[in-house]
Length: 117
Image 1: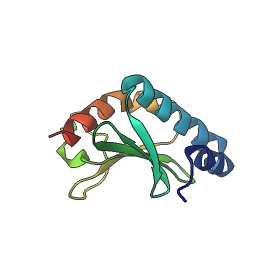
Image 2: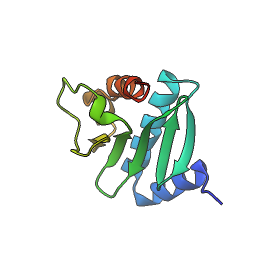
Image 3: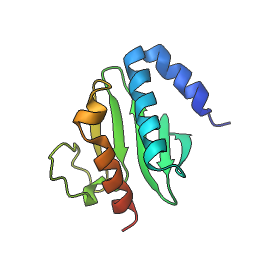
Image 4: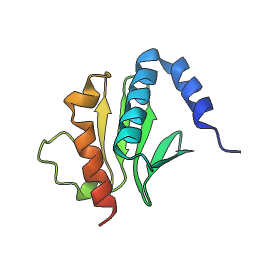
């Protein structure tokens, strides 16, 4: 049986309070920006869909990674995306403040638009 979001959040809280707070902030932003988006636990993180999967969030010891499913299609005018693969790109968050300073809201909108192309 798939792990519930609550169970995954509990596990992430054990990993570190900073990672837990970043994850809460990312989820809050996505719910505010895309109220009809759905969440699913998969690949050890939370995937977000709005008719199509557009992002996922994964917690690691040193950071939280926000992955964009079709990130290679995003025109990265701010130059903050990481990754060189065929499709995905990501932002690494090291603190809750990075949600704003790395313009996550803007990247989420671009990620959804790229997924719908």
